[in-house]
Length: 340
Ligand SMILES: NC(=O)c1ccc[n+]([C@@H]2O[C@H](COP(=O)([O-])OP(=O)(O)OC[C@H]3O[C@@H](n4cnc5c(N)ncnc54)[C@H](OP(=O)(O)O)[C@@H]3O)[C@@H](O)[C@H]2O)c1
Image (cartoon, rainbow, N blue to C red):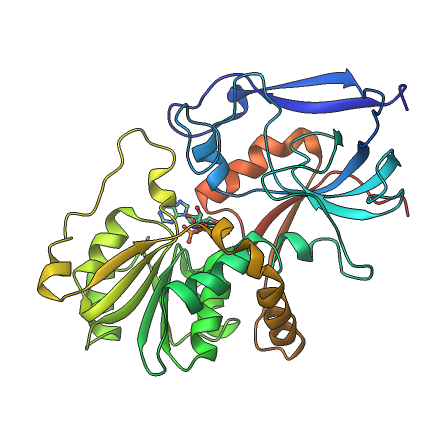
């Protein structure tokens, strides 16, 4: 195994605004020998999540900040190709924090510990519909939003990995659902493929006017993935006792000058609330969510899209796609084929 060469992307500077290739160095290092309790994983698919951008800042978030010189982190699916750990056997397909590299040597300990994947599941699914984004949509909508049938629900980032699943769960619960996304193609997809009641194109429509048209009695639940001016527009139309679920604020991730909501006083007038959440707090209940999502997918009630780019050398550009809206569904990158 010592002959194996590991290509890896190391974070060598912190981005000031938009993350770019310049923030990383591509290097080759030998794969180290395994110690007892360790196993060697070959990366197959990498997942790109907006939260990684926040982890690149100096300040710790809900996890420790990535250090300068550290291999860029990400969740991946890979294959065990050598092992000195009884729980992980050669040939096992696993999910865990492999990072932006071909190989990782690990004991299995991680922010979410490495897990062996059940056989027969397509290898992208544990990172997309059954991954963090699908789970975030599930708990964000069903636990934090606490939906009631007949409510009017607005979701931003609606064409993305989290947003598209969140929208469909709200539809399943009998709500009227309006999705906000960038561009006519994504909006057409929201109504025609994902079955939403309406879509608002924030790049071309007057969002405030469209919200008034589609939500004449106000917005009961707003699942916010983007923050910024769209959050302000929705607050302006929040319903009495409405609730904003703060899932993410991607419009503010690549700036050191976040915009913040100006219309927050609508919360007072409308006796409304805003609540943030972090999906890791629901980790013990992931099996329950995966079981429900599995049924919905099998019954055709929840659809999902994956956007698979190719080649470890393209990791920085694949990461940028989620911040420029180039991704159509869950952003993944294929690193290698499985050997078994
Ligand atoms: N709270 C949690 O535990 C948790 C867990 C997972 C994810 N999240 C959050 O969920 C959100 C979505 O994540 P995801 O992984 O599912 O990504 P995604 O939605 O698949 O991709 C990101 C999307 O954000 C949109 N976007 C980018 N810049 C924007 C801007 N300035 N204004 C408005 N929209 C913008 C783009 O869509 P358009 O083309 O429509 O602009 C892009 O496709 C993120 O905010 C993420 O941090 C939170």
